[in-house]
Image 1 (cartoon, helix red, strand yellow):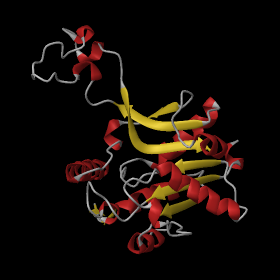
Image 2 (image 1 turned 60 degrees about the vertical axis):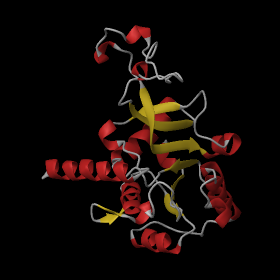
Image 3 (image 1 turned 90 degrees about the vertical axis):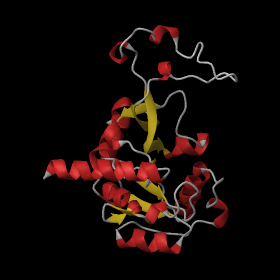
Image 4 (image 1 turned 135 degrees about the vertical axis):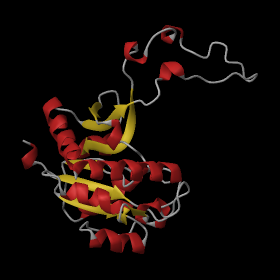
Length: 237
């Protein structure tokens, strides 16, 4: 059923970055960071078109080198730190529809998730069709259980800090919690056009292993992701 549907994969890669300068093309285990996501998308059995939406010529050249399409340069107004990703996706959909090229589904693959597996991309697509869902996002187990988290009072005291139901209980006894990992967002194009977002009350969660769920935002994230990636490579030898 999914083989008869057209799926557009969009990889966003603007030139500016406040958290980590030039992160999209920063060398990550021997390749530009964005190259990992491009190659993961290319390994998918189901994606029909893989594009990079960028405002930056250098990122554009690297994207083309690694096999993605760069059908346009993103307008500057969509390349600011305040620009919404939904607007970036709508810009791409409008671009193709003007060329009479329509897609049934759109998948957002952020280059800041370089450790996702190609099989996770395909399994997320299969999961959406199996559930007859309109939208699916990837999640992973929460590293720190929310029952052990709380806002501190102004006086700094830890009184009432813990959820009472978490006291004297092992982690294994607590209910499972998951977090968005930023690796995969998938939606029917018609649904996305109507809602301008991936997450609603009807969204399904595709579960990924936390080892493949690092979302790079700063230098520490980058180093940690490289450590995990190198470790994974060594384990396969």
